[in-house]
Image (cartoon, rainbow, N blue to C red; front, side, top):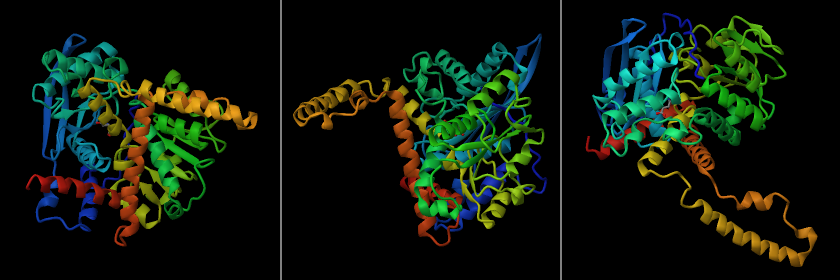
Length: 484
Ligand code: GLU
């Protein structure tokens, strides 16, 4: 299920989403020493394609508008999701494409940045109609190489899921019947159609790994007024779609965090003792919203719960939800941006001045594109990760275990192995374990690179600016290598 949340009322004196991203970019480049003109070359969006196409539905032709924006081609293919939402517009798609450029650079996936959007409310159409609409949109993009394994590789985003990706991949193969790498034209596909284990949970899993890494850095935690581990920390999450659900579920079940608030389209649930994430999700799937959920307080004014007392706030829905209208009232001392652009540039200034620590979107939600990268590599190599090594790894482990058993026979019962050690140690890693390991490694390394800049430079006072500096530096290096 992918949730489309209603747009918040962003105060009209705020810049647009794209301007907001540019303002944050400008803050960072002002602290960098880039060759003249390169700053603008990196900031601007290279091209945005707009398409209007008709689909015959319910006895008449309905016209749809879609976009695919390419922000930077310093590396190709360019990468980024396609969202389906009624209010999608060029400004938004360009902002999101820019964020993809910086995100890919930060987590070292070899892609430029892109994003697509289709103005459609998926809730208004049945599955067959959505397939027709998706295939038609894909056709328009494929014939212009705006979907192509070596040039532009979309993925799921708000309002789309593995189902749409499977339709897009199939559409591409129909139009390029001899392209052996056709499956790599899109990521986030179902596992039975060229996908990879762990892609659906990847963005939420990445949020969990990002928080775990943050909590390993005592000094960084202290800046957010936090100590200890994630165990018992109070978390409010906005949006229980794919990203928010997985992040909240893993943090609750595996790290012992307490999910005290869940904000959805039809209001918010609040329970200081903690909400059961899986059961709230099941309720939403059955009833279409959180209203009526037992064991919690419900308020129709969902956005107010963004301002509730908590340790960590996870906006995992839409852009612009924390803005000039509510930034002063946010009580969380740590915000992790699971959504793209949930904090406007103005709100970012206010929160920074108030000492709130923000783990920025381009890092926090990069788990999705990281595992997309693994999927793309899998598609191009035409082999499942671990297929060649797994049994060989098990055989080598077997050797060690046998040797340990032989030694422990001589040493007596006191030195015997713990009961499940043998089974756990013997088993070679499967694809899901390898994907999680690669994702964990990526999230740790990327955090360390931004934290290093945050700590080593006096003029860098926040993680977002540090993340921009790391990302822009890499994009600039890539342009320099091209002789630009
Ligand atoms: N839509 C996701 C994002 O915003 C995933 C992009 C991808 O996997 O290409 O990061």
